[in-house]
Image (cartoon, rainbow, N blue to C red):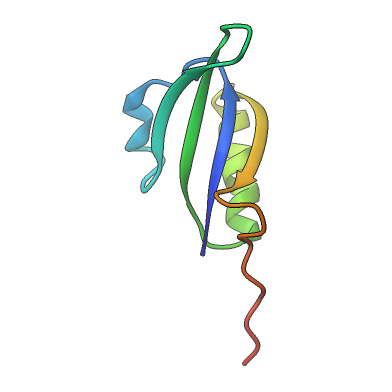
Length: 80
């Protein structure tokens, strides 16, 4: 399982933490002082990653970026 940070344009209210179980919401500002929300948490696989991106789209958030918590932190698949 990898940890990802989604950078979103605007302000996602803290009440959404319950809807995104296991994720934390942090508010910050872009260099030009626009509000930005960072949504960070565990993502088990690529299907879940795409599901989260779709969910963010469905609630009207603008996705700025998606990054693994640490560069190169993506774990290779395990073979049986």
